[in-house]
Image (cartoon, rainbow over all chains, first blue to last red; front, side, top):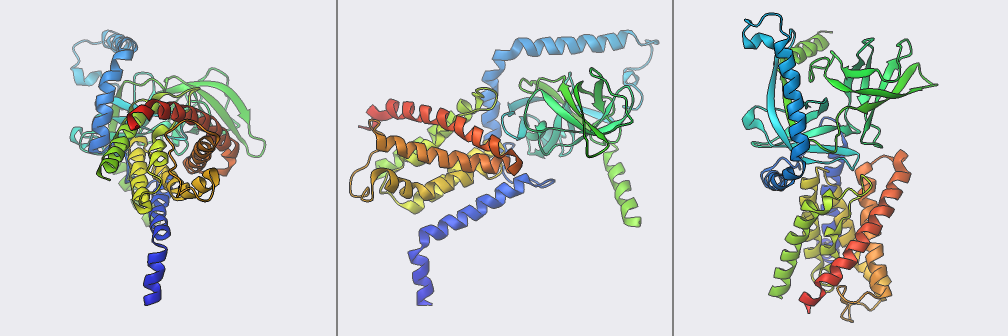
Amino acid sequence: MQQIINFIFKNSIRLLFLLLLTISLTLTIQSHSYHRSRFLSSANVITGNVYQRVNNVKEYFNLRTQNDNLAKENAYLKQLLYNKPDTVIASTELIPAGYEDIKVIQSKVINNSFNVHENYLTINSGSKDGVKPDMGVVNSLGIVGIVENTSKNFATVQSILNVKSQINAKIKKSNHFGSLIWNGKNVGYAQLIDVPRLATVRKGDTIVTGGRSVIFPENIPIGKIDRIFIDKATNYYTINVRLFNDMTNLGHVYVIENVKRKEVIQLEEQTKTDE
Amino acid sequence: MNSTLLLNSFRFVILLALQVVIFNNINFLGYINPLPYILFILLYPVNANRAGLLVASFFLGLVMDMFCNSGGVHTTACLVLAYFRPAIFRFSFGISYEYQTVKIADKLSPERFSFLLIAIVIHHFVLFLLEIFRFNFFWEILLRTLLATLFTLLLSIITIYLIKPSKR
């Protein structure tokens, strides 16, 4: 017993180091694994408020581009509105068919990272505004990411520029599905993998979100095909996609809630357990 | 003694604030950010309590991780640096460094430069290794370590020169 106490006293620094190292390594490994909630995130009260304040200042520097984007989007929506065949239709029916189950929450990016392999954004709406984990985040140009964690007033979003992200996408023209990933290299490009060789792909084709995802509605723009690689080992294409969104300059975003998502997931799980 | 504690707490907050508000947003060449917040660990008094340094570095890294959404990456890197700091001292200043009154925040000499360089390389290498966490990106880890080290080293030396008068 005496020896054990002596040992602890003699090596107290080393033991403290090992203890703290275990904690930090656990946190690190946890953050790298898929589908695990993160204990440390920039959505908590202190970090969220700091980022909100910093963003209040930074906002002034790109007000012009943000305003331009919003004005363009307004113009597009106005065009949709005026081109409706019947103007008597109530405003709720302006929403295209198939989109009734989608709720949209307006929000703003207050912190944006794009310089590491696992990038996250922080937005300034949280559970108070109805934001929940696994909701999609888009802006007027295309998709941005998926909500990962929420607090009362803030939420963190796993950006599409995250090597962990995997989003169902398709080629708009031919409806061939693939998965959108990011290889961690260039912030302007993402990769579409697992597209069958049967698909006719051409440079310049538009990539949009696919219908298999319950997070994003179908046909939200992602980007354009830039280069096509043929994987020799498998029968699939790997496609370099030039993103419509400039991920380094994000302002106003919309959080998308699929009202029927729960039902779909429940049904799928039930089917799995029945087998 | 009390003023040392006060000075270090002050440094802790100021360096973190500068890091989060300014240095994390530099994005030189798209992805290189200097990390001068580790000056807290480097400038910590040489003969002070080691356990205190370990705990302080742990929390320093933890706060950085909260802001960067990076899990425990900064925490681990800071801890490793804090733990190996005496070894780096011994390497740079000779075995009997504890008996001399070593001051890091002073005129740049070869010893101080080598101390800063080794410490920054160790911290950045651990950081990027854990951040990327995949061995097929090994060259990228080295490249990022190299570029960020140069950047941090430059900023650290400038910062040390800037704060020197206030410390005398």
